[in-house]
Length: 461
Image 1 (tube, rainbow, N blue to C red):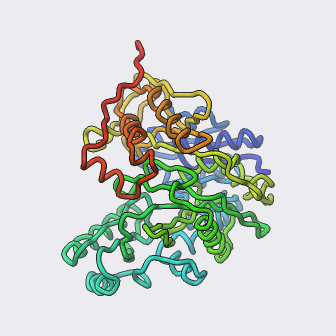
Image 2 (cartoon, rainbow, N blue to C red):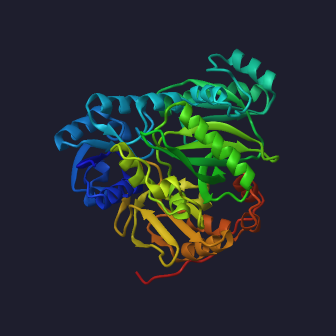
Image 3 (cartoon, rainbow, N blue to C red):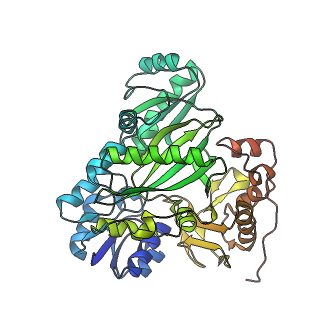
């Protein structure tokens, strides 16, 4: 097992990795920007090193500074978390060349699956269904128009190096395609340093369902079921649940087998996620693979009774799949709400600033993954995620009702958060019935069916 691990990230995922390392008896080194000097991951790690100014381009995205910290700290492994450099094959390659274990897939596997267009090619070769679209990168506007005419509108223009909803545009006709093509390329270049895009047929109002796979270095690979990530806003996930209310045993078997087959075809090792769209007729199509731990890995952990981050570390250290992972079966139902420092009453305007008072819910079946506390200042430089609430129940309705109770207990002042927004969704009849798809939030918000006025508990501060 490793002696010391550097966590090349911040926020709640950095804390998550530190806690896993502590349980495995591994020392930890946190890196941080000047804006994160008071962050919990800095305080809870065994050691910490500042790697630059607040902007991520001057700190968390600086490979040379992270590797310098790794050398100074004499670490033998690096965990990238999610976001930042987590899916950067060059970073993984640099770690390999420096004889520092990258806790994740090899740079070769990451290169194969990290490029969304290349991943579609591998999926086709593996016999996994993909959405109709371009055979490769689309270089010009005229080529984009030809492809869209061939597959039919509406279409999606997607960044080859994309993620998190960036570099993603929808076009319903030729005029909108022209503007969408150029804006997607521009945003992709700005977000990922890569302007390449490809085109897919838009599957109207699908479910977004992903399968968690785990593979060791001895050739063993399993899937731990699915997560439904269809509750999205602006192509970014907001609420996830496991298992999916859409799923049938037969469909789960087909999709799970496809996910495992695709991961095997590229020699994948460690944890990863195969993402699909499922249409109204329950036909599924591969869209991409995330070659890292997911924000929503928590609900799989709760349903399957496992620790995916510890398993990542064990696999990277050369150990085989744990028996409880290799033979995991679902036990419960879990739902996760992503709590962001945003104002839902002002079109989700970011709300950074100092948290005047913080009280997190607890009790049976409630898990909070968060890095914030009373007096903490949410910086404006990074993603607005400040916490994840995970509610677990014997049934889906049990989990929803527990989440409602937990959200009513969550009390944060000084900044605005999305807690009222999530509470409104938990009360929504369509959501409670499992009647939703990727258009759900847009539909209920435009109809005025979300009531954000439910009062939380009050404290005398």
